[in-house]
Amino acid sequence: MLFLISFFTIHFWAPTFKWGISIANVADFAIPPEKLSYPQQIVVAVSGVIWSRYGVVIIPKNWNLISVNLAMAGTGMYQLSRKIRHDYFDDEKDAVAKE
Image (tube, rainbow, N blue to C red; front, top):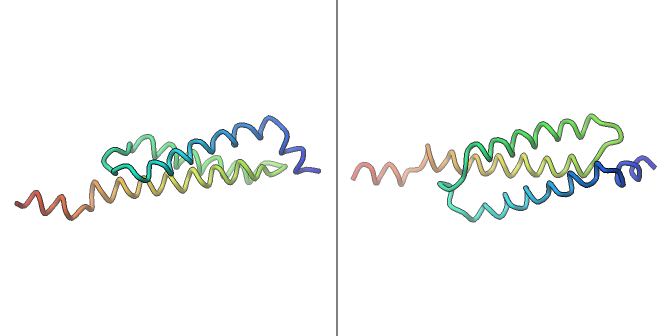
């Protein structure tokens, strides 16, 4: 019964629409890292972590909220790692600079 109460409340719709952010972030895996934005990906990752924690604490548990925010945190951290590797650890950039 608790699942039905949490599934059909207004709290169902916000996490459901947030899946669009995660899907857009997955689609951005194909773009070059230099076009990624640090502020945007930091916000996606941090908000995913914060709201995942909130989803675990509330009663009844909102599994849609937890899963979408874990996906947001994961995709945001992956995009940040791509950007950081490109900006700070790219060996090709160092080789071109030496020439």
